[in-house]
Length: 384
Image (tube, rainbow, N blue to C red):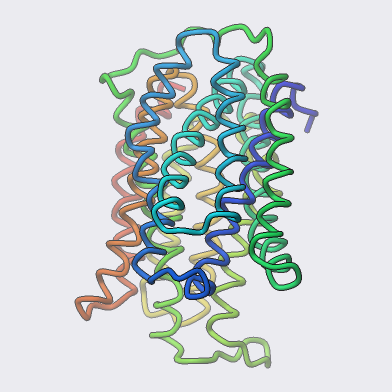
């Protein structure tokens, strides 16, 4: 692998610096909300509001990004992210927190749009997926730092001091964002025409399935599946492991894979045929989900989930690159479809348990969605 262009490193590092404050809330709020005077339903609203607002702000970010100058908007989005983290730690009142979560969602739309389009404008076609992998890698590392260091910082220093530290780190993202955009030439014209006003429907379908299955269904429902199948503990290699620990290990694998493996997967995609791989990876993911659904016991569930997470990491790089080649409008449509899927996934997955159905249906549902994407993305492979 080769070092990505400086612009890509700047925007990727900036994104990684501003994400820990957001990730911190996911790790701490579910256990600390009572101390802040919040109710459980308010925590659910706070942790999902940023995703729902992006349904509209993604389109706004795409519209703005096509109308230079973009530098002030990108810098403002990073400064806004730092401000949100600061307010989280200093004014933990529900309505204020809700307002900041909405602001954060808008800011993230601009950061993500700028990141994808910067990679596209700065990369040679032969290294586009590898550089997209770097962008994903730095974002995932920021999330890991927010969850791990945030949890340690919260226990050792407290809620407010930890968020203040993250806010200071986030301020460093603004100058990096400026450097990533200064003098940047517009991205080249799309290699393909978008089939609809929102972009290519095949890419949109892939983005929706990707968000629905990985971050949505499996991440939110895996713990329920393990508990229903195993009870409280499981014996692995002669060791007794709690279900919560096993669930945490499997989910941590996803974060680590995204953080460390995305550039390698992107480089592999550049060498193996790029978008031609999309239907094949969806197919492998569908088979992995079927393996987890069938009565294969804990080995089948663990193997299926691990393979699925590898496929998801691969697809994130491939689909993000393909959307970028269609232009800013398809990028906006793609990330919106992905956000919609990740927002609906937990509702559907937990709904199975709510109505007394087997939580393993999350795997079957995911397999069906991925199977449909195999057919929908076949022409993507033919045109690549």
